[in-house]
Image 1 (cartoon, rainbow, N blue to C red):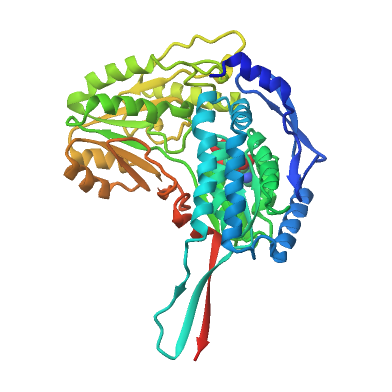
Image 2 (cartoon, helix red, strand yellow):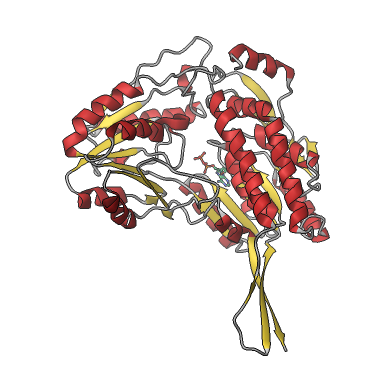
Length: 493
Ligand code: ADP
């Protein structure tokens, strides 16, 4: 296994990307913004920041390439081969991609290497393998008519993604969009463009024609907004905050009414009954709350405990949280890295302070950071007990290693608490009584209910939410719907 020094040596041998990727080539923008390493506060690069004109050029090129048919008219089997090649190249370049991801966002290198990068490769492979196995339809019209219902690509798709799982979430959008024949303009989050830029090069190497995948780096309110308002984008897919998703709905309404598919925030409840396997529930509750520094839209950030087990559970939970190894993201022993940037970490600290002012009791696991790390972006796992729906933290998506604990007496109360949220992304139920779990799962207003696990997820199952968690569904064959138009062709016989 590579140790921190090996990763630092590898880093010294690669050139960090700083150009955006347009028409099959890297290009320098007129404008730039600085990117620093969130773990160490070291300056890394001045990244290209695309302006409206650069966005327009990329969209125009995407349109030309889409119309030319070099991608959209390929037989699905041919697109499949190129996307499978891309998956293979991602695997071949896994170490470099993992290094880039960890440098950008501060997540543990072992997570980048074993979860994020292989996850992206599998996603491309899965959609590549699906696309030549999906049939269209013939409608049950009368005998003297033949009505064919065919899926056609949307055309030019914009994908706007966040910084918590940069390559993974990009691949959730790109893989089905590309498999169905669209041209995609991807805008990574300003903090985390490195892996998307490397991916563009790998896509070219895989034989995907120039202009089918372009990566525009830049700031949300400039580059992102220009894409959102662009009159020649046919569809926009988004993962990020609920607040920004609402802006994209406005951009669409004020421009060409492009369909916008948001996948947004969450405040997922982890409901633990007294009859659960508590050892398993404890391990998974730690994972659900603190994995990826809690920077997960479906993080189980509200634990709802049946009152009779609450004291025992909280004590053990805090003991377990103390074992999480917090440290340098490039150290392979690190289980929790830093947050994305100082401003976000300050917001998280503020949310904790507010909860304490409202009366929550906090247990903060002590931080022991090495000198080469920036303490302003690190936040220790924090457990807030005594939280009720009157607390702001019960409702607020904190997006950090902060979990609040609320107790309940009855099943009805548990469901009422879980559903008391503007969000509805996910929930978990822990009980050995499967009958009870299934009945309750139907009452939860969320996109995914995990029973006796947390945050269950697979490329074959849809991921998305109810309410203000957005209505876009990523993953599974259902994601194909977002990227295709239904066309009816009617023949009178
Ligand atoms: P987070 O809160 O997770 O940082 P955001 O919703 O702010 O999520 O960001 C998700 C994506 O949306 C990023 O790519 C970001 O650049 C983009 N974005 C942020 N603000 C805007 C905006 N006003 N208009 C368009 N895009 C934006």
